[in-house]
Length: 340
Image (cartoon, rainbow, N blue to C red; front, side, top):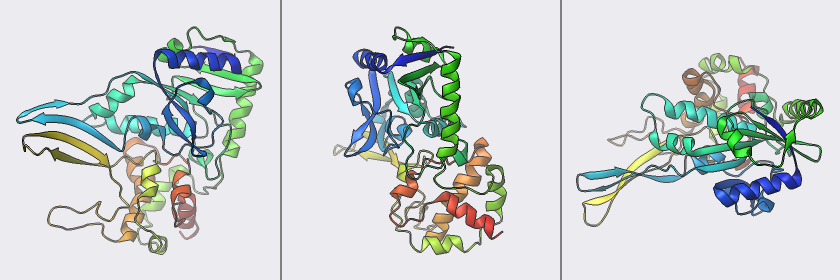
């Protein structure tokens, strides 16, 4: 594949060209914060952002609510979105999160709705330029990436290196006003990566990721779960902003004619009081402490058993969103390590 160098002007011209011919979801300012929205022009793109309010996978692949199928009597039709689009400005830790979701939604009974959207997307990643206040991606091995994207942009000097790693990426860069990168450009990018691996550590995780499952396995009765859960509002903010929380509920909306309607799914979350309630009204995780503990076990042990990776990429969104200030994963795991 190819590694090109573009000036700021060339990058803007390239982005405007993309917007003119395809749907582009790009990172932009929103009420003094940043989020992924339909991009109208290159001047609105903010590749210098710190962190997006909504993870890009939840903005594009796992919407808060979606229609799965529509029905009329015994007839039904699945709703599958296949319109191509470019997802522009994804940070490395979110690239890792998307790769995890790709694995999870392809397991067992593959999720055709997710996978159709994912196949329709071309991902343009961008190395971090501004570190957010709670990011600890460096501790989770997600400060930089070398796969999971189609094009990777890295700010180097007065321009950007554009690294196309797939056929989709090559096609996207075709026609851009770009020159072949030099060895000096590559060396400058290495410095950016080294810097980010050190800088994206606003919270320090003292336990090795490979040791987290074993640490959790013997910590079910640790007092930290109850201590922190006493402050929990069960609001679900942490799961809503997390790029690797993917639980959802499915329900049928039946119209007044009692013959037609739609099947939909919507985000759900393990921290909500009714999440584990089943038929008959029994709730097998009714205590806040049990729900709080479950989230950390899910991140560090349960998903790790499924895909071989910790289901936390260190974006820090949960820390920022939690009004009770109890959603800091490094703090919790460090406490378990200190008391083992």
